Length: 439
Ligand code: DLL
Image (cartoon, rainbow, N blue to C red; front, side, top):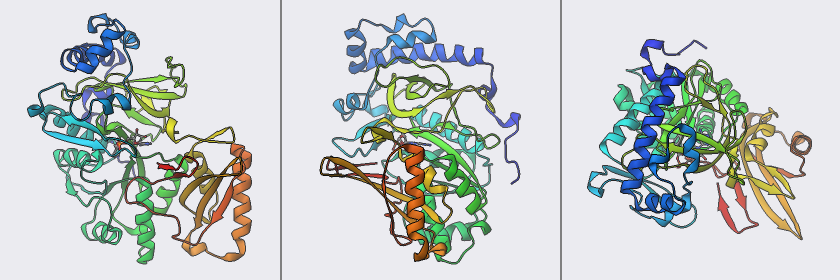
């Protein structure tokens, strides 16, 4: 595959500035943010006062550790608009995360915030190999979810031609990718696999399209999945990360020339990694929960937000800004099966080692007697389907999971197409033990 990396001249100078320059910008912006939040959001004022910290206590970047964390339930308690730091009339747009339980989390953006978001998406698209004039097929959902409109704003600003198709209507997705000749696609990796199936259903070789780059995020995906997608489609598969509470897509992005983790746009977000139980800070290269503080947001500043995402911080490579490793999973996605901790991404890796199996899967947890049970639903590739080897493959996958993850699971191989598909984020785990579903 040819190199699509931008030249140094195309980058924002801060992307490759010295660490000193980045840190000094962060310190100034952090001071501004703490003050802005304290003066304008009652929640932050009360939260800081409760433990006796004041924005003026921040003298260097480490001092941020003195300030309290913010959690999802804090945002819910302040539903809908109480976390806004500007009068409601200054908020140009709201987004909300659906949330499987209780109230959604509402976030708001001023005109300047939307401008900053568009600039960062532009940075992400450029790092992913897109160039002004390209066509981008945007299959992230439009609406309250930040994926569709977030990408859209930055793509237009960059001078791309945007196809705002959103999720769903899979046959139409294939038709428009082919008819319009998109160079890039933005979509969840699981929905992209569904699009891949549709190419095959229509008898079209997925390697024959104009697509060169896929920018995948909104859910965890492994490097094994990258390999699978890059081989099947002959494209570059690039990771984009973000969350509504901090921005939406565009908090961090991989660079096409290195594909070695996601560079965090540190001029706008300050990352920390903490040990989730003790909440103590961890060092570079130590895996824990990712925590973010915004540095420039006006409408919805966020201080030390506990994302629940598990990763580690790494030094810069293609950019001087630090990287985060691919997300291993979420603290609330972790399955504890008979005392063993498992993430769906570890199961994904084992499935992808077996060439006859498709990458679609779902995990069902139930209780049998006193024991918890994990049933793994998978399916073969349509063109590999032969009854004769199903029991052999079942055993192979169960054995691999047992030896790599240390748990016994029941593997169920259905017919091709039997695993439920989604047009956005995949629902990987159905937990019947607690009688509620989460993804
Ligand atoms: O998913 C924003 C987004 C849209 C990101 C499109 C990338 C592309 P939320 O719905 O608030 O926002 O969900 C945020 O999704 O805390 C992670 O658990 C997960 N997530 C997002 N990107 C990635 C990624 C959007 N690249 C939550 N890898 C986050 C793994 C991701 N997980």
